[in-house]
Image (tube, rainbow, N blue to C red; front, side, top):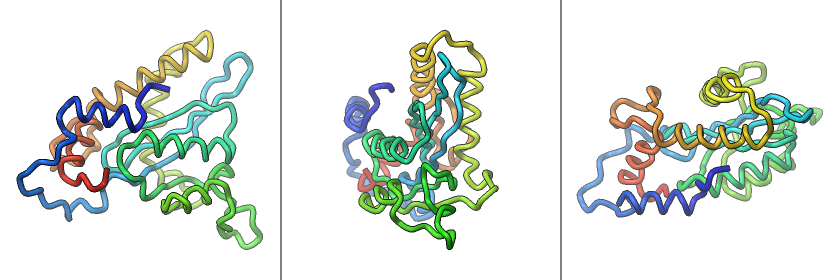
Length: 216
């Protein structure tokens, strides 16, 4: 994946001069409390088979900034879900406080137990607990409750795998990487709150860093 981990994002903030906390009084943010950075919507979507192998895209998008992150895996397992979350923790420059996922076995054991309750023993839940992240689940058979990440799954595919036929996995990865950078830094996003007057996920990240640096 692109070199966009936490350190690199921070260096980018420094480059643009937004790592410094403004001296003037901060704008009041109480109105937007529910939209503060740190609430990730996470999902897994299918990619085309290449060389006879299935490919899965683990996708995360932050509710407040729409900053996007994804990785390709050959299996959608709990182990890969844990690895992906660890990589999300490295990638996002703010503290992750909440995660919303569906009820897939890679994320939860809710429908494995007799009483249909989360046991807390699932690998993904254990990592969330250690990281002080609240893991929330969608209502079964209602994907619209995680509609934000479902929509971005379609956006990713329409711009890449549905528009181009790739010869190999490396070619697909390279194109997806380019799209990830474009999405975060250049693509205008109508879903961002109008009152904060930003256009791209990166601009939203900049806004929140200046407004509430304690989140980072």
